[in-house]
Amino acid sequence: MEENAVITKKADGIKYIVINRESRMNAVNPETVKMLQAIAEETKQERDVRAVVITGAGKAFSTGADLKWTPESDELQHMENRVWLFEHAIKAIYTLPVPTIAAIRGHAVGYGLSIALACDMRVASDDAKMGMLFTKIGLMPDGGASYFLPRIVGISKALELTYTADVIDAQEALRIGLVNRIVPPAGLEKEVEDLAKRLAKGPPVAYRFAKQAMQSGIEYDLEKIFEKEVIGQTKCLMTGDFMEGVSAFLQKRAPEYKGE
Image (cartoon, rainbow, N blue to C red; front, side, top):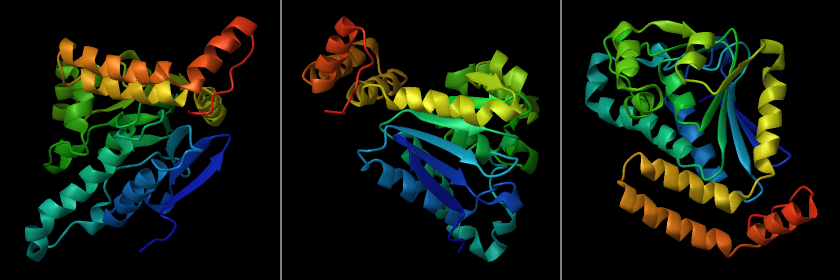
């Protein structure tokens, strides 16, 4: 097992999660996704983390599942369990209660793109490449891609990307809404850091409930969303962060949120 296949660091309320298999273009194997899941679950308990950035080491975000671990025929009975490993890691990322940003440099394809799609936002270098490559090897998208992709770019474009397995550039990804913004490669780290710092200074309780409500909005009808908003907003109104936000606004200063 590669102990450093995923590494983390914290700074200024931001937790950086880095897929660290540079020699494999950050392709992930079962052990790597187990680490991603464990780190995401641990992060949910860390009150000092106010934003999360997920990225890859070196020149790529992630080129997806590492095909070197493809099971032999006598392992086929274990395939479903293997697939669930990859799904559980995505769920752990998607349900992080803080803002999440995928910082995409180079290729984010296959399951690598699925990881990026599970984040709240995606910022890419303008030389990045993205694609749903699953059908190139006779697979359907996994890692939640069949859930996220049509909701982000629309079902017609999602199916086109899936059927053709085309790799698109950053400019096209921005045009169809797959990424939020693109920047020159040299400016990617600073752009993501500045955005993450801005979010880390925001009201964490409000962010958490807003994220839950918007994610639910994809699945539930308007009445259910009203209920989610009432519950979340009522709790937000009872926080010290709300009072701090109002005070800071009236005093024309930057708020200092504490997540309580």
